Amino acid sequence: MNSRIYSRTETPIGEIYIVIEEQLLSAVYIGEEDFLVGEEEFQLKFDPSNPLLKKCKLQLDEYFKGERKEFNLPVDPQGTTFQRSVWKELSLIPFGETRSYQDIALKIGKEKAVRAIGQANKANRLPIIIPCHRVIGKNKSLTGYAGTRTDIKEKLLFLEGARFKS
Image (cartoon, rainbow, N blue to C red):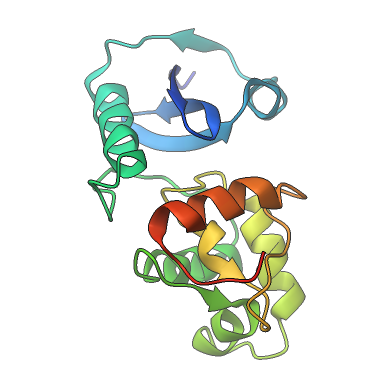
């Protein structure tokens, strides 16, 4: 059985739960409710002393203080080939910048897949680390984040100094 361990940290957007499996970051949850739903089928051990969990916590703290613009963590984004191609493209969006769903669709060569890009964003288990919050509507308006939590998207983009319509 794979060993999944977790820790949590308090941030300006609330409590964040960090999960690692086999020494790879496997999930980041914003809020206890998402954590409990996302991990209900797994046996987890709370281990705040784990070096990778400590490193992730430190990098998140630096990000929220405005001291970190990129994450340097071993990740394991579990998803379909299409989802992984979207997440790879999201990872290339620089800190403080945004792209539209259409921009991402064009970048991955699937120009008609705008809604599928939204679904891939929703399936991203590593928010903030893989910055799905940087994807906004073509008209620069905020659209769904973690389902319907555009307030979190707005806070993250504001923290990064990104331009958008609220």
